[in-house]
Image (tube, rainbow, N blue to C red):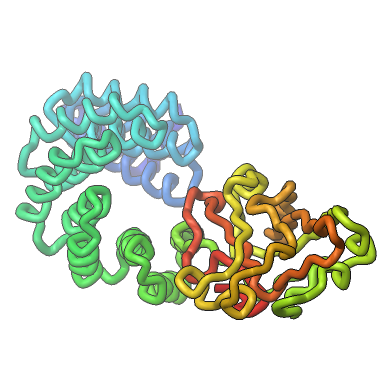
Length: 399
């Protein structure tokens, strides 16, 4: 059998009459363990696993054997052999039932595999076995957080901070809980503490930037994004995407009205908008293209009841239809809801189609400049419109 150990080393171990003592076997196990670690670091995982198994067999129930089991589990995870990693840690727990670290390792796998209940059980066991282990406390807190048990998570993260006040993990967990509870001021405070303790803690920057975005402080959120970019962090996209999600959608300033001249003011004859409207009681379908600042929910966009077409008022729009004069009886009718809406998801543009009608005496007038188009739906992430830019009219543009 190829032990992966030099013949000189083996000869030295077995040269004396005491060569077969457990001490010598432990020494040989340690040597093979070291070779396995070298293979592991060289990413030769199959060879490393073989070495670790030999090391564990030579020195069962020892610290070296425990380390070997841990490395075997890690090697399987590196190869994405999750089932074998789980079996390895279960076997390690059977042999070393009092070692909390194996329960934590198994819990971590379960959490990654979205087996929340199984993960929680392993972390709870780990804390019972070693209540003063900060890592176990932190892992249990994360499991409670995933399960939505915020009070229990808060308790574990508080203990984590007490056990390791110089570690960022506990403060990070407290910030997560505060954010989940909606206490954004406390979240910012705790996450800032986490970063002060460990400026390399990239997850804390993501969480802090997200908390700022939740507060609507997007410049501060962008500041955290810049830090991650400077670090070339693979978590940059996570924060960037969240900022996009958290930002309320707006109308963009570029609006294209197809045939409906929104620069025309009060007492504009309807017949000047289209030759179709020169005849009495005729109607014409106009459209206006409105672009949005982000991806929108198409079902929300095409629902006519999320749109409102109205005459401008000082109270609602800062302008007034027909110069403030009461519209005459001959004023053109514009229905308050569009006829239909289409949405181009590639350009985030809605085309709002609406009717304008001539009156029975063919002398109707209209104030196109003070017709207001407003959207009250949501974006692709369920965010409501920014009320500072959810309406358009010719006199004010986007407002």
